[in-house]
Every structure is written in structure tokens, then in C-alpha cells.
Length: 210
Image (cartoon, rainbow, N blue to C red; front, side):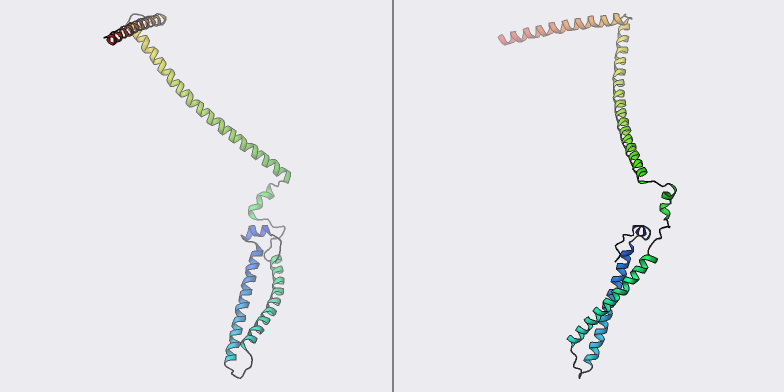
């Protein structure tokens, strides 16, 4: 069997020529074995029909095996020549023939160094794409955060608008005056709450003494 990988032929045929030749060899060999078994069975049948014959079945088998070895030896020699011819003239692609799927390489030839440079450019582009994708994801996250902050600011603005409306209803139109008015009311509420807590504590102590 040829040791040449014949990769280009395998690309064209879909199988290696050596595999094809191996299958043909096995098929011929199996046929030879089957033929010898048929010949042996015919000889044994003729032997059984001749009672006076002194040849035994064991001698027939040894003769059959010997003849099979002789045939196989000559068959291997002939097949070796046939394989050489088929691999060179039938199952091989000439050096000047280019497959259709490889036409692009003829139009845009690249040396090994150019191919390495191209691979490096592809690697850098992949890194840039990954970096841009990560940056886009970070921008989307920041945008979502800005939307949440904007919603909170809108709530605060609505609260100030409501506060301003309340102050106008109470006769204070200026925001500073409104804020001072609000702080004054808050101080009053704190004093009232403190007074209520003190009275509550006194009542609890009184109840404990009783």
C-alpha cells in the first residue's frame, strides 16, 4: 500500500485513494477464498463418488491450502502493480489542476508570513469586538442606572412642586420663606412629639407606682 497521504485527492473524492484500493484488495481476496472453497467442495464431491480413490480429505485440504497460498502470492504481486497504476493514473490529481473550492487561493495568493499577519489581524479584531461588546454592556448598565436616578429626581421635583403648592395655599410664595415656614412647623411638631413622649413616660411611671 502507498504511504503517500494524497490529501488533495481525498478532498476531491471524499475518501483516500488508499482506502479505495484496500477495499478492492479485500474484495478480491474474499472472492479468491470463496472460489477455493467451491473448488475444494467439488473435488471432495468427486472423491466421494469414486470409492476406489485413495486420496483422503486431509490431503485435499492440504493441497487446497497450498494452491491458495500460491494464488495469493501471485495475486499480491499483480495487485501491487495494479494499485501503482491506479494511484498514479486514475485516482491522482495532477499538480497543475486546481479544485474549484481552491480558486480563491489562486486569485489571492498568500505566503506563510502573510497568512500569519492575517491571523494576527483577525486575533486583534476579535479582541476589539470583545472589548466593544463589554463597553456596550457597561454603557447599557450605566444607562439603566441613569434612568433609575432620573426617576428618583422626578419624584423629588414632584415633592418640591407639592411643597410649593402647599406653601402658596398658606400664603407664602417665596421658596426660602416656604422652606423656613416648613422648618418652623417641623420644629413645632418635634416639640409637640417631645411633650407627648414626656407625658407618656410620666403616666407609665405613675402606673408602675400604683
